[in-house]
Image 1 (cartoon, rainbow, N blue to C red):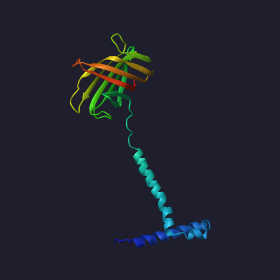
Image 2 (image 1 turned 45 degrees about the horizontal axis):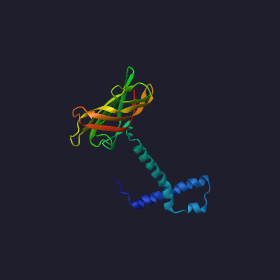
Image 3 (image 1 turned 90 degrees about the horizontal axis):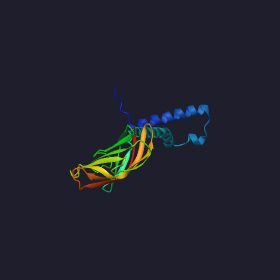
Image 4 (image 1 turned 135 degrees about the vertical axis):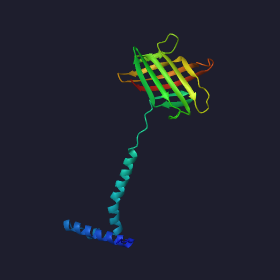
Length: 200
């Protein structure tokens, strides 16, 4: 047989439970008359308030379990706009360290374009000016996928690369590049305010 419980039944059941609870507490320690005379609504709050707090903490815990965003490992300014990248790696070749930075067109602050940056510098801390007889070299590409324009790659003919820190496992530094187009020799483009940090 199925019983349909009305709201009045729930209220009566709750009141009865409260009376039993107060009787149990009274057996352990006498309660002041004012406490036992408190309205039923107060007792309901004392019963359900901890449950609400627990539910809130559970919701916060589930929210905090979400995967964090990958850290930004490189940034620079191109065409007057700041770009960032979450992808960078480095490797050592003899006495040279090579840094590869990649920004996907769907990544943060990509503005619908793909940018790759390649840096070559001596394997030691210092600032290296890019030039014809320099130990530092660099190149970059800029593909604007939103318009289909500017698909050229650029060879850095000016600028500098700074290796700020270099350990057995990480490298960090800055760069400023001025490049000339491979296909269109009349085309020039600059990357300024560049920063990077990568694992070796």
